Amino acid sequence: MLNFYLRNEKMTEHFPLRLAELVTSRLCHDLITPIGAINTGLELFQDSPNTHLAESDEILNLILQSAQAASARVSYFRIAFGSSSSNVSLDEIRQLIKNYFLRSKLEVQWKIPPQSDLAFEGWGRLLLNAVLWMGECAPRGGLLNVCLPKKDSPMLSLLLKADSIICHQGTLEALKGQVELEDLSPRTIPCYLVHCLIKEKKNQLKVTQSSSPLELFLEIKSLG
Image (cartoon, rainbow, N blue to C red; front, top):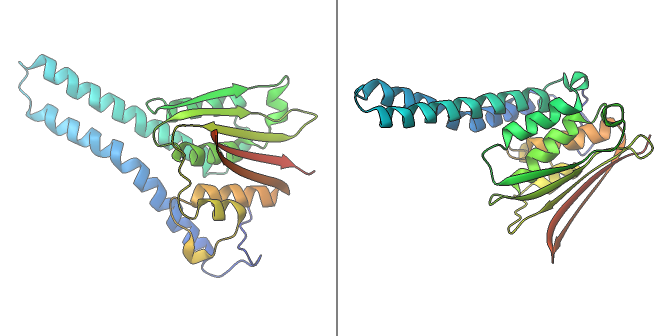
């Protein structure tokens, strides 16, 4: 079971409820758009005459793409925010990321060492939440290089290169655990989960940003 920490290292009475509220808000926020599009498409299809085949095809395509997006997000969040990632293989994690960013402008490249499945065990949730944050840092798209842990070098690193990189307010503080309970938000929840997982596993976090070239680098190193 994941243990959550505040900056003062004490669990407060209201923290579990607050965390549940924020995760729920995040889920609803990210799912409302594709689900709403499915509903709109079905309403349009119901009102569309059968003779307008081209228009019907467009509506069906909208419904299909929106359903795929909703499914990809639910599957992604189930592992990123859930507790079953220890049983998820590297191939499954890669497929989750591919499906989630399928229609985005973010390209993900992988550096996969030998015996990657064995070395990757226990890193799934960290990777999914870190990728979720870094993807949001590049709203116009970009290139995300993911270097997976090796058996003799337990370290996960992500390097984002993009024309525009935006670190939204509070995300860096959440990554480092330098945030109060009332300052957490649905946007910063993935970052705070990264912090909690790092603290639980006694790992070390490094985040750097450069302007020339425009890059964002995140490294998580196991100290065990």
